[in-house]
Amino acid sequence: MSDLTVVARCGQWMLVDDADDAELGAYGSQAEALKAAGDYGRVDQELRHVLIQDPGGDWDEQVVEPPASH
Image (cartoon, rainbow, N blue to C red; front, side, top):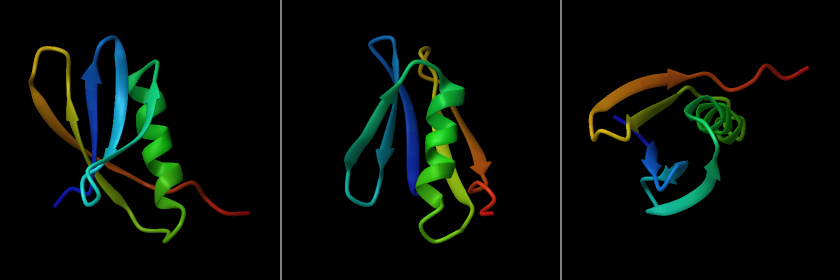
């Protein structure tokens, strides 16, 4: 099950919280949006299952780990 989605929209990659249907931010690349998803996961230190929709409309899923706390 996914709780975050990264969607290509108007030249940006949007990070969306599926539970709240809220946009969390716009990023210049998919990699930046996925990093933000990992940072968002830092709150509870759980893996995030992120759905990704590319500009062509194709879907993929990626598991993103929160950053290591020091």
